[in-house]
Image 1: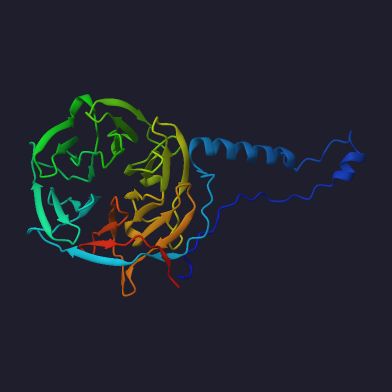
Image 2 (image 1 turned 135 degrees about the vertical axis):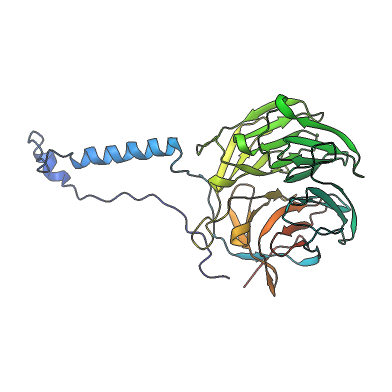
Length: 358
């Protein structure tokens, strides 16, 4: 157990005021004394404080999750492999971001190189495509990748403002974006089992729903701190029950929506060492419904239940190596967990066996 990294539940406290109820009851007609300066009586002050808290909450200054954080203890998963390295040669990457995993391959967005790298599950480099540009195979700072039910590859071409679709082998199929969709710096994407696509439109503080053919269906949320708002939504994942999980990065919380866009619940991330330090968060949901949220600047992955209970802080690759700056995270259909670390320049593969770290 790592000391000082547990979660301290936040509770509201109101100062107890000694009121002489019996005396007031015996003197109902006596005018209460002033505070000497025309101030408010204590009861009036309490009412004003309560009104302030309600208004502040409505404005988003205090965000209550209504979900128990539980106790955040240190956890770990067995490491089964690692690969990668910093650079621009085949299989290498600079500033990695999103990850996706199929039954037999792992897909990585090499953000700074504007390309997509593909590896087999043993880490052997298979192929790549992309490069700086605006055409069918050009990217401008891509952030996310996802796979549809047919195995096609969807890449979030963030600063070109397009979602681009390719075959598994890398052949361009189509793209969606431009004025019709008005994406602004989108940085997250997920695909449901029925092919419905969800895009975190980061710059506009909303979640966009597209049909499997890329048709615009709906959007939810707006910029802000309120209960149905986002501030830089980033990582997106679809859970086993079909609900959508969104890493609301600058609000430091996870938002959960139904497939029809109803906001179901939300919870705050754990403050590591007493503070929030990351402005980017990526997430994945496994077949058990556990939610993995990367916290790059805290060198941590936060693990929650699907209901928002903190299950643990995952801070080590193995007993000898700590995470540097974990970014993208993905879970394969078999349950294997993949994490790319920007500071260590590695993709790590883990077996789905969570254990407590003593």
